[in-house]
Length: 241
Image 1: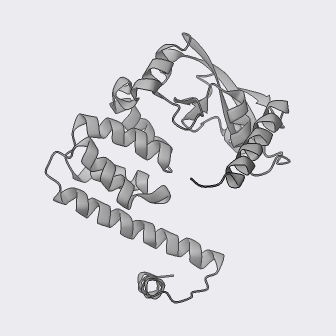
Image 2: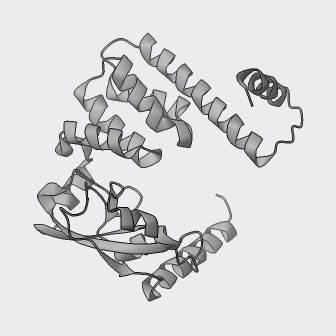
């Protein structure tokens, strides 16, 4: 799909016309749509009084970012606009937790930021209460574990790591949970807005000793999944007020 085809399909959808797309066309359409929204978001940011405040940035990310574009939108605004330190810190937290960040850019931005400014008051208090050394877990592919360069998102909760390892298929043996121990001082941030006890940190072999904790789901995984299913059923059966 090229841009002209995208515009034609976009306009047809806006007119309410039925459009049938193959999975490949749908993926291409989403990429073009994301780029268009990101461009519009950057234009909106450039119209804001500079430097952009935290509230203004949050509004732009919410309106134009979406799940797929929020990280790219944030990084482009950082490159092309002046923003306040508060906006940078809160925007980094929002864009990372809501979006799909690339590892190296995210690492650079987290290292540049003051971690105590990135975290909200509740997360900062929880982080300060953690012990000096943390056992952290990550659900990942066997290939990522073999490569020894891991994503930045870890958790102090093993059951959360198991969920991320096998959330799509409990029988997938191409997934594992790995663990390591780090000083709390090596954590770049702690986020718990989604109850995931997420630790942002840079773990690479051979500098860090990482081992496979699990190669298949444990009882913690099934307990967590069953509880979530029960909660979803209860929510679906609860009448709206």
